[in-house]
Length: 253
Image 1 (spheres, rainbow, N blue to C red):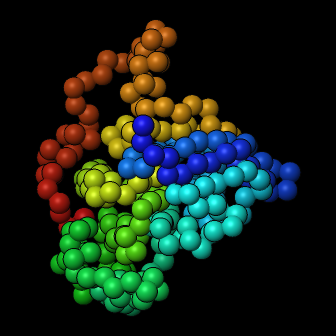
Image 2 (cartoon, one colour):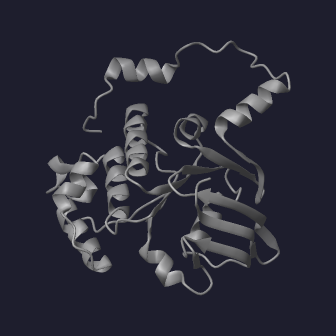
């Protein structure tokens, strides 16, 4: 059995009388891509931000790689990388200068060009962040989460607003991060994204986890109830057509 790298027990978060997260518990295993799914307001981002030490919890216990959130938040920060829904970078600094800035904050020596190569942005090294396209900004944002060589990478809706080709490119990058030894926790609204990337997912609604399992197991369990889609599923989707016509290779998106 895989090692548990994140353990969440009876986690609650209240804002006055409003309960945003309601007594949830789950484990994340080392080396997996774990997804938190749910509609807006389900409590996904709040849960992530608590684990990331960015938001105070009301009650419960969170352990990250053996470190207790209550007593060792600074130690947790050293082993995680966080990509938020929106990232603000100094608009007049180049990508190289931004990486050097972040590496200085982490007190970590980094080969900036090598890091940009990992996310296929080496040709944009001397460009300013404000000159990047949406997909490039997301890839650069993820690159900044890797500066401190984190054990755990948090991605909050990483592909929102991207075109299908840019989404697929980012999927490949996320898998590569996992393959290089990091554990990845992500939130997403895209079911196909969760199905493609995640070994296990927790579906949240109204602050609660209503199901936790692998995507395949959840689908099989639904089919076993006699569920059938009202429309026959074709062997390809419109997204497949788009990517086939526009090209699968990494492009300047």
